[in-house]
Each structure stands twice: as structure tokens, then as C-alpha cells.
Length: 379
Image (cartoon, one colour):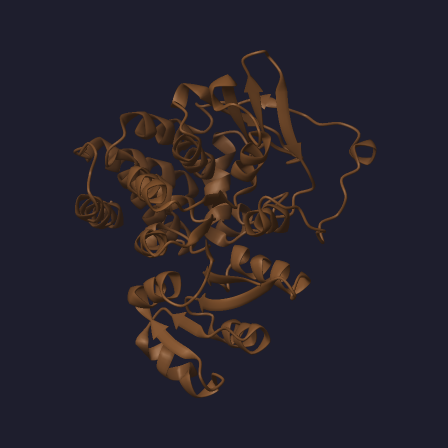
């Protein structure tokens, strides 16, 4: 049996990972679960999947649930708890499904401990991609993408010579406001932004999809995962979310990966790679869909995507600053403190004040992250 631990078990990716585990109980054993503050759901998961180790976000929450845990379960909390679930225990694979740069230290700890990574926390590569990929290579650890787009590219590259790749194209649904003009975006609400037309995701990722920040983070992540320059990473609007991404080769051939929008498919592939198992996802019928549509990406309509790619090309701490500014701005929008369009304005204002550090170490990355968050909170 493959032993897995999940960081962010009560979130969208975490719960769907446990759906996959439940479908194949003979193949997977849950070693550890780390959650934030949704202790009611976490306790349900603990009693169903019987992990040996559990972590929550604070000491108070740990004290609250201690008496409700089965005997023998080890309980941790805070950032140290995340690291313990990631690097301690006996997991073969760690699914990093926490949202935000909070996943960086625990991911690095898991790699240091020799765990393979099911990577759903894109902010880890955006914030410190060079550190993560270098450590994974040194430790012989696989970084198996869980995002549907990166999983698609990963699958399209199976058995191919990387030198033959001309470009990769990451598809984008366009999010909740893909048919809105810039003028129409002035008065949109949090509730409007959270109505994604295709995917069921957490609040932060859904907002990132609406601003197209999510696609910018994915471009940066693709650069690190597949070792390609930004000039070979394209973005294409594809409202139906059927083609998850594709690869063009130098002979002009294109290989694409298609499927219904169901995150359990890329999650399961990351857990079973290189094998493919039966899945709960609905079968794709192109005849029923009838038509797939595509649009060129408009970088004026989506300035946050342009900023993300510019930061990726700049390198250094620029991507760390971009990510930290966005996390704070999105949190403020979700609290109804700022307007939707103010998110990208805050990102741009932060970047204008950012003093870039090339090839930063972990301490410099953490300093940049903290300083950026403080600035973005005050704007």
C-alpha cells in the first residue's frame, strides 16, 4: 500500500484527494492529515481514514480536538505541525494542497525527507521555484503536478524528447468574469467572483481565476516544472475547460490532454503515476459538447497575468513579491475591504516599490514575503 500525507486535507484539493483514496482503499493508506481551522471536517476524516498523525493551525484548536481523536493519534499544530506531517512519519507521497506560500517550508521539509510530492500548492514554486527544484533533483524526489494544466503537460510529455518541444500552451477558462468588460468589473461583488462557471475550487483560487492571477502563477510554475523559458510558455482562453493544456513539438505536431473538468483525475494520476486506474470522473463525449472555442489571451484585459509573466522573466524575489501582494489583496477583497479591481492595482503598486534580489536564499525569500505582505496590507 502507498502511504500518503495530505497538507490541507479539508480544502478542495484535500477532500478530493481523499475521494480518490476512498475509491481505492486497497491501494492507499493515510499516514497524516494537516488542516487549518475546519476541525469538524478534519475529525470526520480522521475517524474515516485513521491517520497516525494530525495537525491543525493553532494550539487552541489542537486542545479543542484532542479528546475527540482516537487513541494513539499524534497531534501537532502550527507551521511546525505542517512540517511534521510533511517530513515525519512514513508517507511515501505528500500531497501539498494548502493555499499560499505557507506551504513552502513544509514542502521543502518533505523533499529533504525523501518524500515524493503531489504538488497542488503552486505558490511554493512561484515563491521559491529554484530552491524547490534544485532540492528535488538532489534528493531524487519526483514533483508530480496536481493542477489540471500541469498534469496535462506532464502527460503530453510522457515518452517525448524534451529537446523536441517548441512550446507549451496553458489553457484558461477565463473565470467568473470572462465575458465582462473592464468597465463592468468596477462593481462586481465577492459573491459574483466566487461563481466559477466550470470548476469547484476554494475561495482564494476562484478569485485568482477571475483576475487571471492563477494563470500567471501557473505560467511561473510551468517554467520551473518543465525547465522551459517563458518565451515557450503560452496562454490561451478556452471557456469549456475540456483541453486542459497542450504541447507543440518542433515538427508542428500538437499533443493535447482532454477530459471533463474534474480535479480527481489529475490528483489520482499524481498518486498512481505511471499507472492509470479507473476514475469516478464522467466520461468525455465530444459529440455531446459539439464545439470547443478558443480566444487569444488579452493582456490588457488581464493586467495581473501580464505582471506575473514580467515578474517570472525578472526572476529573483519578484515572483515572491507578486505572490505575497496578491495573497493579501485577495484576502482583503474577500473581507469586503477593497474592490475587485483594486486587487491588481495593489499588486502593481507593490511591484513598483519592490527592490529585487536575484537568486535569493530561503531567508531572503521569507524577508521579502513578510515585507511585501506588510506593505500590501497598508495600501
